[in-house]
Image 1 (tube, rainbow, N blue to C red):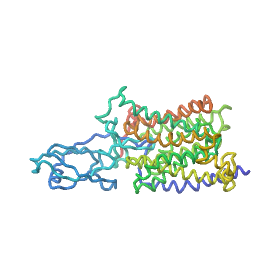
Image 2 (cartoon, one colour):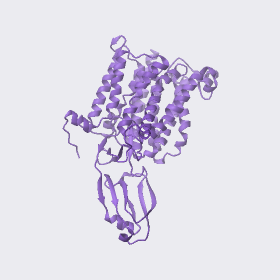
Image 3 (cartoon, rainbow, N blue to C red):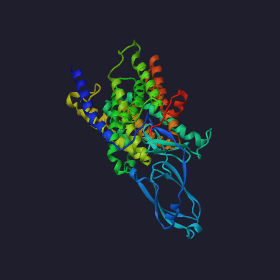
Image 4 (tube, rainbow, N blue to C red):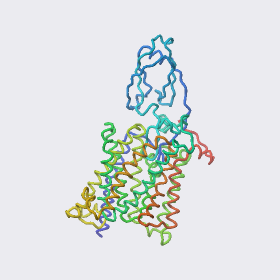
Length: 505
């Protein structure tokens, strides 16, 4: 009876906490995404000849190609314009992607060898191009396969065009290294699940999570000082949902196979579109986003096989609370992706500062959970595992917390796992992901990152001896395919499926 009472109390707390958080998400100043990435819409660049711009520059005027109502950060640069043709790529005052060409010469403008002018350009980068995948947006590299910008006139989708300066596909180092780097990041992300299970075998889940996130926060702390002040509250809100994902994941790993937790975490492919509909009232019919419906269907079938196709046959006998926490993990991370990608798309230079805030918030919340767990607050409401009031035992507490975890020789393996998941798979991995992402297309990055559950299953087998059953393997494979399907182009799917589609204005 006491156990049932704890379960009810926990569910009530989750319900009370989720409502105001959902309202905050609705108020967050961001934009919608589909699947794990912002919808992409191909566009054709326009060429405009602006004679009046030349006249404005001739009298030392200031020209801004940034739409004021977007309220984007701007920086002023002084440039010397020599008597030669020059070209500016920017967002026009109608928010369409426009390449603006201005030809000037000393004789035509009546100036000397050079002139001074003041140009306002977008702080996102030279042309404002970005790449987004699974909750991260960064400034696109000059040699990225495609260049994308936000289209504020079309549900704030991404307008993408091929990049003429992209690296040629092949076996060259320039083409391969960012793809290999991102694949390594996906492999390392997969190790989090078996290592989390390994840590939970020796430590309380709260202590393991707080140690990991504290170490990651220390590694990323220099980026905290680079966060723009106007992003602080939204970044903290996003960090709260990130913490929900990490805490739920750690609780699930107490008694649920690591591979199962990883596969169920892929339900973000359903969470993100659902938030786009609920929060942004985005159109998400089958003709609008066929890739989302295909992905969601495959994911739900995969989850059904994973959950119901146990060793004892089809049924609910193998479904437990660990599965609930695994799904809640997807809700936390999915909501975090939803908010983060919206922030980073407008401020792609802030990817690492926002990540640093997410880790700091996760560390703070996990530490608070650790205290409540360690003192058995509210009759053990926040405790998961057999460790009891471990924080009240000085000897035990010194071994379960930092820095004592690294000083106790009996916990060397656990300390190594905490350091690896904190410094490498959380902090360094995000830096590597940010570097690689700017050199890839969104679809390439999404496919590479979609392999994470597969690596989790492989490492779970190798490190802790977990075995996947037949239906587990089939369900997990369908979930991975669902993650890959989010990267499919809706235009291509409509053509292949014969879907009539007329875009609404």
